[in-house]
Length: 397
Ligand SMILES: Cc1ncc(COP(=O)(O)O)c(C=O)c1O
Image (cartoon, rainbow, N blue to C red):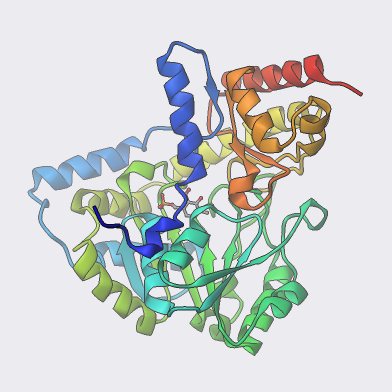
């Protein structure tokens, strides 16, 4: 048969996060006691008031199509949330609700990128950014940041990466995978460069509510009207309200961009799932205490697990300020235990120590591994113990 596949999917790499999670599940199904630290989702159930609201909407018969960009009542709940939490004011035509922040970002890149347009992606990055940019015909331009600069890019680096083809820069704070958070001052400097060179800022704030030890969220769009006008804020309820499976995310920004995104959605998705939209109205309009309770649970796990992880020989770990990931540099541990690469070390951790972590190569930082603490403290402590024993038993000076 002739080659049926389009060129654009030939270089598509499946999400590393999902691949490792699937491998760990395969071992579990064989009866092997694997502890999975790959999860990209909170381990709590969706709060009861949200479940109740979803059920109530279904019982009322709200199970039909909605406007492509989301129910007006949900857009209003999002507008209120952005005003309440971020002091940002938007109108209905400046909001689009989509099927998770992931699909909102996908739609955004489809709308803003022509063949060859460049998007600046700081390393380490969330795995889907480069693929989504490429699928839209764009070119990812990577800007390196390492542990020495707290995995954050500087304004000077941003300026250096900008060319005539640059359309946008992605800022993800708090970051997946590093857990780092840009300060207001750092954002001010980055935004000044974006304004100077007339590029769009894509601000992925999905981990906004998961911040620890007094760190506060600040949206780059809050800096000024000028910055807000060129920023698309992307957020959602997946991580904040433990609603990953409901698939609701949104973008807020210039109506000139939101309108074509909505038009595209009208031909690709019709609308985000109606029941999930009703659930999200409750998530934003209802009590927020469960959001804080989940945050506290993550924070107390981090406090227990961080020192233990740092004590594993050959692990160098920056203490994250947000999200629910740790990104230790394990290059020394891998080398001293006889592995040629961190990827091989990760495979050995899975098959010999029975701990599943994600290799940092998927995030552009091949010397690291990403582990998620979205699992019980008991399992986390056991997993760290297993990794510690594994490294110590194989260590050779
Ligand atoms: C940085 C980042 N952005 C966006 C998303 C997508 O979130 P959603 O579940 O709303 O599609 C994720 C999910 O893992 C993420 O880590």
